[in-house]
Image (cartoon, rainbow, N blue to C red; front, side, top):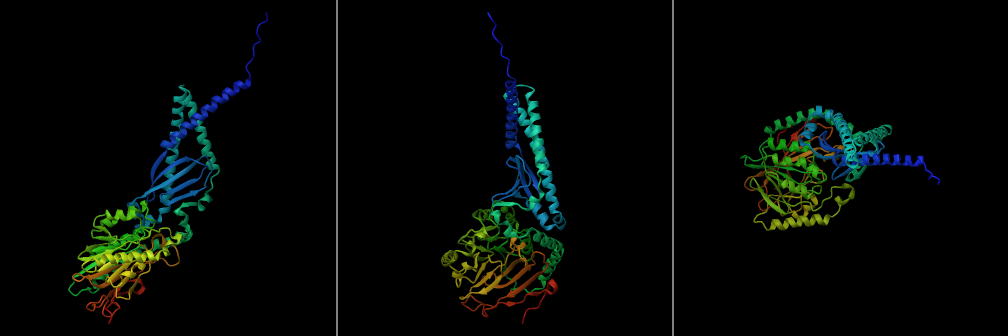
Length: 507
């Protein structure tokens, strides 16, 4: 009887088993590394004035900077299986103000941001690598229960990490940094702020002139004592009208200094304190609660309901929404802009005049229910003021970024403010930068009549001019809202060569 023939194992079968074993090892190591990185591979770091988080995510390379809720900026700067995600979480108010007001720090802001970002990325790389190795080893140990498998998994992960880093270095494209892709509301960023090269040039000029601006501001304040008191007996209520701050730290600083130097009794803000009404912007506007005087605010078309709610929470702050408030004995009524149109590209800013007029009519209905008309009404858009003509002596507005004082047909004085924030980021575009403006109002403490007002102008980007001009109003005829002569007279001040000197009252 013949013995059975023995079949020798195929070399291909052995190779398949080995290949399958290594494929399983690679898959296990990769899965463990990815899980560990996705769950734990996120760090927090300061980048210039921002608090940011950084992480690597599975994608086709490149980098993305998220600015929630405005959108994101993507840069196709390298290839590979991981994308660098940077998310700006908030603006640190102290660091932002330090950069804005310190020319030395401002001069090195680009280098500082670059250093912060480089340091954060290096820390993220080491953190990600450590987590990937630990995740791969731990997953391999749990699945295989063999002591040497975690070492093999760590080796595989090391090779994968080196390959990823090598591919990123080999495909590094620094020229892509000048060609970012915008998403969300940031699609309009280039049209909003213009050419980056032009901005840098103008900002360098502005930075060089900061010392002159500071000197001129000091001259402005020293000249105040030479200006005549609006009221002969000195019994005046002093209110500050600001508008369209657009989140400019310099505008907030100007407001704070004027409140202190002019002994202001209250601030009247006719809106657009932010640019987009977004949560990250709200970090700076909380400073209105530190002014130490009543702050009366109406929402502009750039301000969200969340922004108005945050201001309402601040000490001494009041948000008017078809309502009134009394400040130092002066009654003020106000109604917000009925629109919310932060995105200028939509064209909504010029639409809906009927809606604006109806909001003015709604405020008139509120005023008619009062025993006496308030001394001042606040609106954001001057087109809301039409129905208020004859219902109140003075209407304050903003929105246009163009200061103008006019008497309406039925005697109401319409005072449209410029931009106390120099139009915010919009001050960086165009040949002629927006100045920072505000107005100090002097009202009779007993009657609430507007006696005089000081127009303050701080030169915009690249300018150092500072000036103040006082306008006095004649006494009103009995039973009339308008001054007897209908036109304010100017006492003001002159500014030869941009330096403020007191002037004598006009004859």
